[in-house]
Image (tube, rainbow, N blue to C red; front, side, top):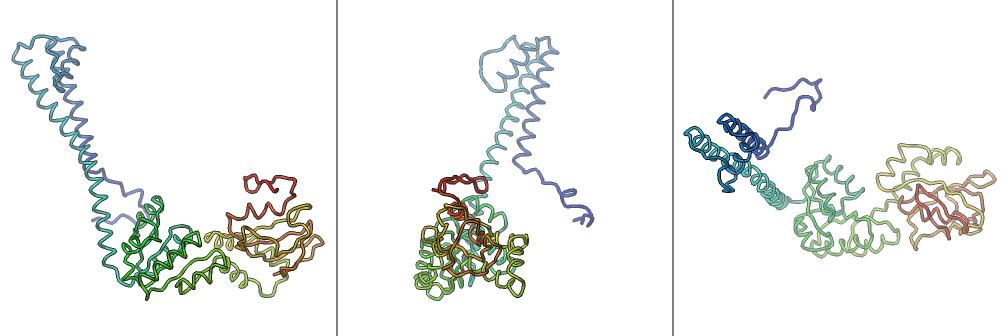
Length: 372
């Protein structure tokens, strides 16, 4: 096989070949049109009108049986009609065969692909089972692939699974909390299970089920609510990872000696750090306390969403210009204070509404929220 020049982009020299069924369909249609054109020309040459010739060709090829437009008496006309019947039927059958092959091949390839993937999973030993193909699951799968660690990805979302299959991952479709789904992923032979689903309750159920099915399995679970960590550990998880805690550790690496003002400026303006945190669903926000808001005059400890402290208050820039890092929960908020928060992106709109006046509606990143 000839190797293309290194300087030439792959798209410039590599073309996608036309599949066999499509080639048959195109060839069959081309032959059919050519036969019709030749037959019409032959009838016109025998003295027939153009419209009569077209009509005669159509009813002859498709066997309608309405009868001949004009008597076919001459040997030439009869020979032409016979050729039209044989060649026309052949072209139609060839074209329909291409369509049938395309349909059958598609279903057959799908079935064979699923069977091949099942066999590949059955051959795995000491692999990792990854439950969840969301943001965290996708990043984890990429890292496992780069590290040469075999794994099986479980998710119930068809779009995510198709994207994973396109990347060459071994996948299992279904709910990871179900035993038969974990069995399909080879949990009896696996060494590690990582459950990184977005809901803590689902991660708890997966942990309980997996621990019962394989007592020797190392289970790493994701937790959104810090209070879920004890539950996950109690259910059998060996380790629990909290995305908010990861963000806090990232902050600790940056907070060494700079002044508080510079630190807060760096946290909210550095794009590299923002991108890294965004990959695990976190981001920084500066939220200003508005007069007559739900938290005006309240303590930091009163900032709460559905009982879930799934965010970290990094610092406060007060109205008088003073800046405080890691303020205590007893710190009292006042109108004009700016609170620097690290939290989950999907919780920020509701959290931001608490900083606005109770009488007003607010727009956060294109979403209108009632602050009442």
